[in-house]
Length: 522
Image (cartoon, rainbow, N blue to C red; front, top):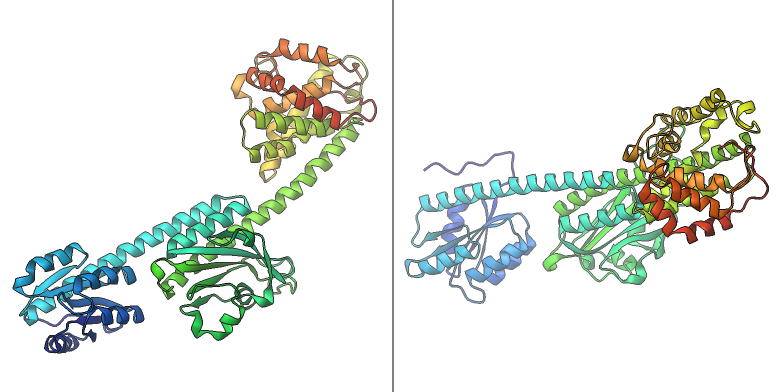
């Protein structure tokens, strides 16, 4: 039979021979060495397990079953805990064939019978290596698939705390760790804060440490990952490890991806290069972290850094949009001579109705931020019409109606959820549930819920303040109007929500009173 083929460009496969009989050990070592393998030997399972822990490159174990100190079956069971990918082959005599079969049930891949010959050994090794190759490829494919899923998930998260919590859970699961943390770097680069943690004392959450006095600080300052298999072999690490009890851990930086504003070739001195540091410790079953674990965490950290930058950038954009919204709202108030707190009240009413009608907190906040721009299109309405005392002509009212489409056209090209939502509200807030509204005569649920909510908030507030064409209505008259228009002008379900939460709505009205008579046309 031909010798077992190995790619000369690859490292030689390592095999461990375990048998308490010296002659058997030496025979197998000679056979496998002649075939091009790097072979180690051990007289019993205990010594074999020590060698396996010390050398993570072992690919196969030939082991006898009946041995002192630790038998072969126990060795197989323990070896699978230390190195799940190692392939175990049992050597046994005819008298213990049933025991060999029992060993296969425990995880042994195959068995050879004593006295064995060269062809049997070669066949067993060939089959074992092919099994390992397929297992390794399947594991690699599974890892790539899972890493892709992690990447997809983190890219969809828009909240920093949720992102970091998910990232940490995913990292621990991928490398089989029980405890860990993500520490974010402060803007000035001097401290780190525990932004997410699992398995750590509760009082560590949100705790801060100096950059110069922590392992995470070293990783952040040097922009380098740190893999420690045994902390006791690293006295410098021991000195800064503080309360770290585990002997093996990994710390990986989440490095900033985007270039600073201005010259992309120059990094701002005050801008930390690392956004955060991912730390994992306490390997399952007491094992040590490996280079493979470090590679996996580096991939997770790379995707996590990009996602974290995106989340923070989106937050900056939304913060800027908030400023734009309220600035535009103030312009609209001035343009239409609104001297009170109309847009602020409408914003708070809209948020309350959103939450009480079952929308998520995040969505309700978007509506609160967007609703002040419901009348932004009025900047395109002539003063003579917008502030005309008394009744408008049909032609003038047609002009007023265009403020919905003007506002929509102004906002529809904007990026970001706030301004996109404001565009929807501007277009829909004068539609009626019965189809008699404007600009498009939408009916029922064809009117976007943002418009249905803001429409109720806007009308309630407008009726209660004085305008150039009408006095302020009393509360009882307003409530009567809402009861009459339930299912006509207003969504009946939202109208019910309005009445069910009237006390809170009135509290908002009292919190933002009219400073003087407002005089714009609603």
